[in-house]
Image (tube, rainbow, N blue to C red; front, side, top):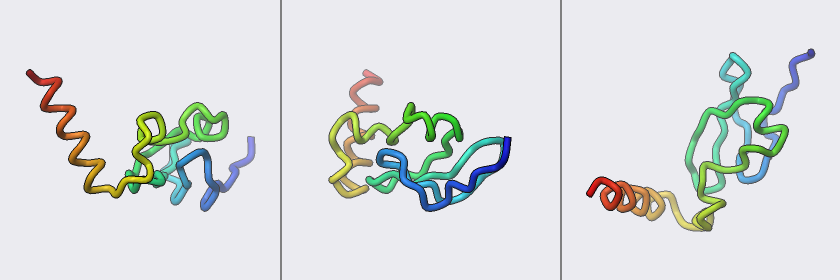
Length: 78
């Protein structure tokens, strides 16, 4: 199978920015989160965001989203 350059391509809320090797791409989400995602999960549509799409926070700025994530972790820890 030939290598397909996905740099700059958008998959859901993710934009591929760099090939990391081992079939993984560094992607930036619409909310600002950076994640490494497997090639086939991007192309199949299985992974479309860091989770912000599901909870509706993609339009929030990164600082608010980060605060919300930390709040959730604190609640789960108790």
